[in-house]
Length: 246
Image (cartoon, rainbow, N blue to C red):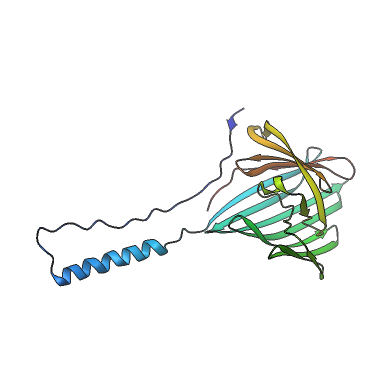
């Protein structure tokens, strides 16, 4: 059994100005103008250059009592100070070869400079459909669920659990139905967990209250999320593969 630690991928670009050779004699006016124009162009290019957007993908397998029932794919795109998270979840439970339950969810979440900005989602929960939109407005959050608008008196982010910012939350927005949930987060500590035969060093957090989850985080990214269903069955979402940057 091999031991690895999941590491986030990043990319960077280095820019520099070309060195100007010193000439033995004073340059002509034309040469000086040429060098000045070249240096000015290089400086302008360097100061305005922006790193290309990077996309990181996390794929999770969702199991119920050890049997796979679905997948969750999270794509995180960073462009400068802006971060966009695209998530797609599909769950299907069959009993005696008959579909007993299905769940489909797609969402787009936006952050800027490390702060939540907006969240838009469409969910089909076994035939019940929900359209949700949340947007930060000043120090408040505008929340719309199936056309019904509510203004929350504070900033509340969704319970999407794509990063570790949830650890300081006292309220979270249900990502499917838009319910505002009161929560408390307990720091359980470091643990070594087995994900697909690989030992992963992760930090364990327990969320209680209106939203109960156990979350294991490695390098700022949740790698396992577990909960108990309404029938007390254990449902686990494990990262299938390490992140890959494009």
